[in-house]
Image (cartoon, rainbow, N blue to C red; front, side, top):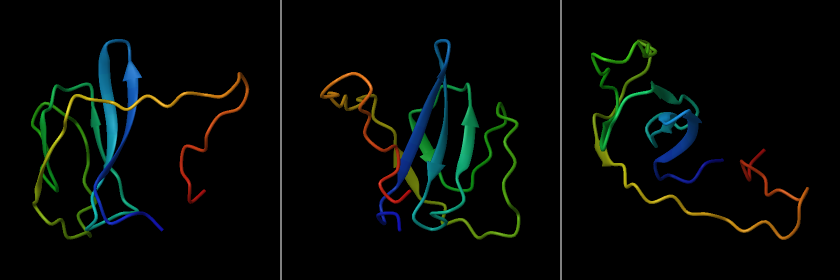
Length: 89
């Protein structure tokens, strides 16, 4: 089970970022954003520049989240040993 905080899975496409935003209101239904510059994320809001589809059957909370520009790096003890991407997997 996911922690009740918002979570982002970030993926780089060149210098553009795309991500899946997991909001506590729908923790198993990520909201995808692709290749747009964004410092804030509002749950359930569909940016005009982004072609993302929202699941219309879900209710979104409408909360706004700040997306800080700091990413935490995790040291790998040795090559070939990687931490799990999702501890619940």
